[in-house]
Amino acid sequence: MKDIIKITEDIISLEDTVNLVKDPKAGAISTFSGTTRDNFEDKEVKTLSYEAYIPMAEKSVQSLITEARQKWEDLIHIAIIHKIGDCPVGETSVVIAVSSAHRRQGLDAVSWLIDELKVKVPVWKKEIYVGEDSKTGADGGQVWKANNTQP
Image (cartoon, rainbow, N blue to C red; front, side):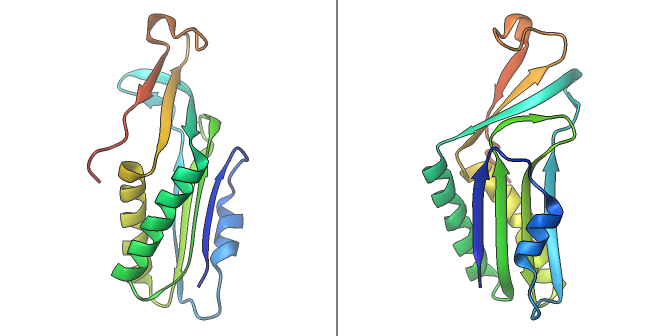
């Protein structure tokens, strides 16, 4: 069993992440890929910018993986990769891939992992909107978003 955790400024590839969790014992690989959308509450989003204290974020992710393995014994490999820095519209900000002997446990684990990640992992997100001064934040051009408090 492998746990792969990466907090990175690099572009994240779903295919590369899936390849990290492939295993001959796996009957399923379940994934979640979060991407930057172009809108939020009637505002046009230009980019998201993520920040994290990497050692703390990695420790939090490992705790989630450990808990997931206790909930679903059928999990083989788990990879969670989160982007920091700027993430323009259409780009991937987070990928979770889980290989498991059977699909149901993998699908349930992926759903639980992304919900818990958004609540518990100290990665902070700022939305930067189109048409505003993204450097100064004038006229509400950027907003720090609170982590979800409920999955």
